[in-house]
Length: 125
Image (cartoon, rainbow, N blue to C red; front, side, top):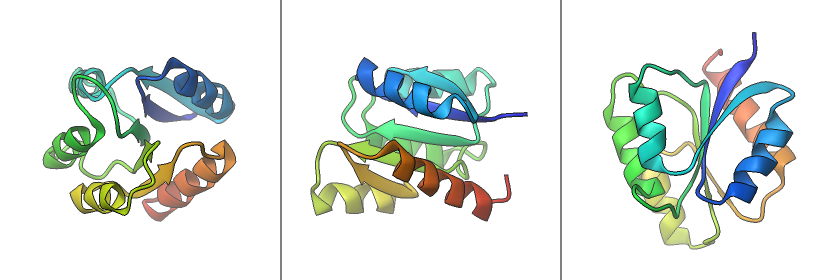
């Protein structure tokens, strides 16, 4: 059975690229913002890992991290943040708030895949 990966990004092209890259190995679900992703999770869906954008409408990445980590159900899901901003302050803010990793766009999907696999191995999924 494939692991499920939740992609949260308001740029359709990023969602399509990641869905295409990861669909060989994962069941990929794409949501356009943090609010839609939280609603999907709260509807009873589960994911093994999350890749989320930092800059999104309705609920930005930082608020998404905070809501995710405040929940007993979702607090341990591996989470990688993506951002077009290579600012140390953003990285630190995301990591302190509960993101497991932070990558700057443009990124190599293969590197993202390795980072996700390493996280999933550590939690034995």
